Length: 199
Image (cartoon, rainbow, N blue to C red; front, side):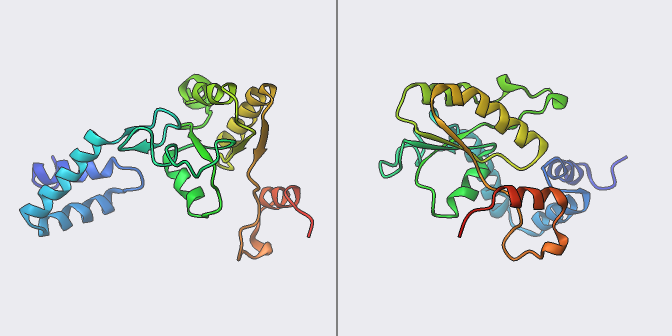
C-alpha cells in the first residue's frame, strides 16, 4: 500500500526514476510542486512536452538540438578540420565552457561497455567514420571520460580512425587545478606524468 495518496505517490515514483534523484529528493520535489499553483504545474508540464516534441538529434554531429543542423554544425566560424568526440550531449557543453575549442563535435551517445551489452553498433560511430572519409578532417580529439569504458572507447576509435589518415589525439588527464598532490590516487598521478609538457 503506498504511503501517500496515489497521485502523489505516482509523482514521487516518477521523479525517483530520474538519474541522480533518490527517494528523499523525489519526495521534496513532489511536495514543492504541491505548494505551487496550477499555472506553475501547467508550465512545467508544457515545458516537458515541448522538449519531447521539439528536441531531436543533429543529423551531422548527434548533439541535441531544436534545428537542423545544430548551432555548432551551422556556425561558419568553426573549423571543419578538427572534430572533438564526446560520449554524451552534456559533455559537449563542458568543452564549450572553456571557450577555447572552435572546431566541430561528434556525440557518440554512450561508451563501449561489453558487460552492459554496448558495442560499437550501439554507438554513433558510423557517422564519425563517414565524416572523416568525406575528407577535410585533419584531427580527431577523443574527449571520452577517463573511465574504463571511456578509455576502451578511445582505444577502439583510434584503431578505426588512424587508418583513414587522420591525426587522433586524446585529451590530457591528471591532477586537477587546485588539488593537493597528497590526495591524488596512483592512476591520476600516472596520467598526469604521462601527459606532462615542457615549459
